[in-house]
Image 1 (spheres, helix red, strand yellow):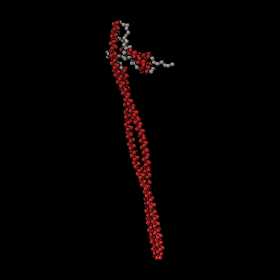
Image 2: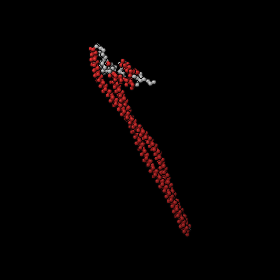
Image 3: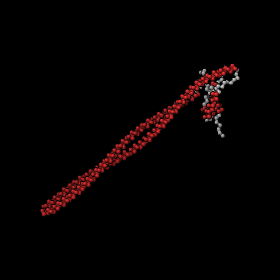
Image 4: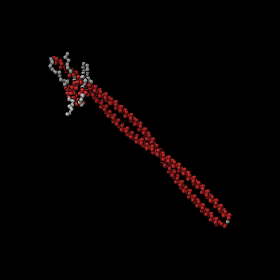
Amino acid sequence: MARTGVQYEDVQRAIDDLLARGEAPSVQKVREVLGTGSFTTISDHLREWRQRRDENRDVPPPRGMPAALQELAEALWHRAQESANEALAHYREEADRRIAAADEAVAEARRQAEDAEQRESALAAHLASTEQRLEERSTALARSEAQREQLIEKGHRLETRHAELEGLLERIRGEMAQQGREHQQAMETLEAAQRERLAREEQRHESAEARLMGLLDEARQERLAGEKAAADREKQVAVRLERLEQQLQEARGRLAEEEKQHRETDWARRQAETLADTRQHEQALQQARIDEQKRLLEEQARRLRDLEQQLHRCLWQTPPTPDGKEEVDNDEGPAMAEPSEK
């Protein structure tokens, strides 16, 4: 079986209880008295009760009293009704102005809150993008550092190889000089031996001139062969030396290129470090702006709550009566007041 909702009579009885206690009826108070019911249903019944109360404001008091007293009562009734209507119109205008101002303030606060939320979202997106770029820069910087260390290690190896080549070149030059000295010494020894043998042959027999000439030719050929062999060895050594010089130049060129790459990498690393410092500073500034925006949002929310409280007080404030006394706000209006019998 479906549950029966809150009826108009239930709301009216709750309003009567609130008026009897001297409290102004509202949706929240009516629901507290009833202990149940949706705010929408209670609000509809409360609106209907107020509409009926406004319709009954102009109903004259019942007849059944003497004519003079009836005329006096009607005159007092109309006079009180006019005064109450004037005061009520004045307070209604003031309340309408305050409500309009409060609505404008609420709308402005909501617009500012929406703008602040949009700015905060934009700042958060920009901050995420900045953090991503900073992470990419950090990764690139780490790769650059690794490449720089590899280049430094490669440069050390090239320097070691260069030193080894320099030592090898010095050894080859020493060997060539030693071979030249040995060749010169061998030629001198051969010539001395030939001269000695020639002298002995000349002293021993003049008739052996032909033989001596043959020996001289043989010695000359041997010397030429030795010189040719020495020249070949020198040529080979020169070729080897030229090849080593070329390798040394290539090694020096590679070393210069590696040093150039190292300088470029070091410059890129310094640029990345500078950019990372700049990004960190920008991130700190953005975080400060975000904190400021959050503080402004909290301040705007607090002002919005104050405006809502002021609006609530303006709506339910009791207007003073024309004689200067405060009228009890029973939401019945001046139309429900009984004329005095005095």
